[in-house]
Length: 108
Image 1 (cartoon, rainbow, N blue to C red):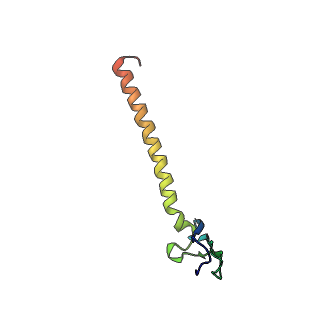
Image 2: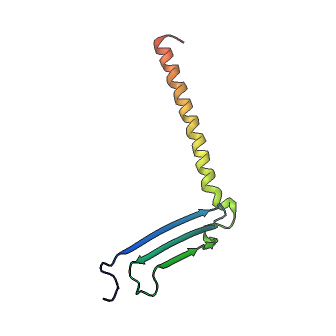
Image 3: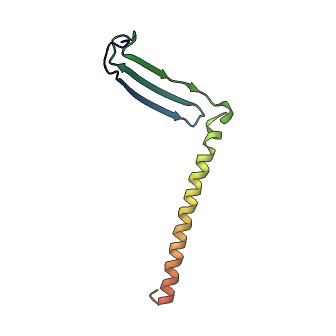
């Protein structure tokens, strides 16, 4: 009997966590943590239980994304301006529709 047990069982547990964030300057950072544990009911394996952990935290600047905040912020500003224009267009459409309905029904 190599395992010194009548019935060999294995228990493996794993936990993973990751967080990433990017800033307007083009810099990004990420952190990941992985944790695993393998356990056997045998007394013969030398590494029982066998824990395994890995933590990484790479961070890198993105020089190709733009040289300053204004370049990287341009798309955000365009999107905000587009939202303002859309809001004004909807308000104008509502006002025009209300005015036309008022004229048609004579309640003006």
